[in-house]
Length: 347
Image: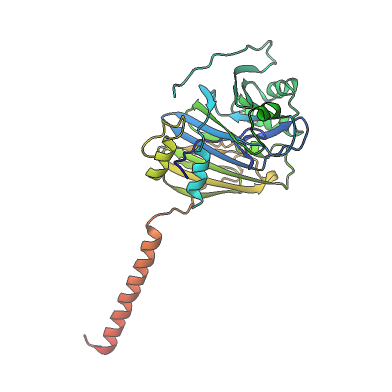
């Protein structure tokens, strides 16, 4: 495999959660057909006050158009096609440009309408970034042909209380066919978002799903130092927490648009494998050792809620092998001492 790099993945409704389908954190909103989302891969990289989201949109099944609405933690300064191997390189790691400011494209016609902040097209994806409350974004979605699932109003309101920025992505099957793009082919998207602190939307992955259906997702984080992590759910496993290898960072930096990757970063890898009904919060992070992650960023409203700090992750370090060697050495010394005492009891 040639040098492959990783990026940040965020979910989009149906799309962003990855399909063998690979998508970021989002929920599916479509018209008809059997297009579905099966797995999500997300990378959220935070460096110098900027969060980078790189996500890949993949679909399986049939249908002419399908869309996704993804909550964003802030207004992106750029939305562009991501690198070709960013997410694949991250998956491989755990399984042994000029920034452009966007001007507002359209203003709201009245206070009850969502504001369109930017619109762009990437391959067969039509991307729109919106600002508005849950009701306004839901109205915009239905006015533009999105079919919202019954739980969409509650979920959109849940996110709009923290951030009123959303990304709507529409997949055009006709345009994809004209480009020779098949179901399951991914389109990587890279968003650059200035933030005071990073957080990753996870509850959106359960949008439109039956409570018992299993949500599977991989979440990668790159941060300048080891982060403190917080969620309100039990279905997350911190599978890797360690300094990112030089090879990984070099590979990521070699991908398109990933030149910003620093020389040293901390890699956190989280696995989600839980029923949709139990995925009810998000992931908050803090890279300041003196400041804990925000409950608000994690979507935790009650002071009595369960808190999962995700602190016990196995790390691939020298400690395991070294500890084994030390135990053997101590055992051998103890055996030698006992044998000597037996032969020379008064030594």
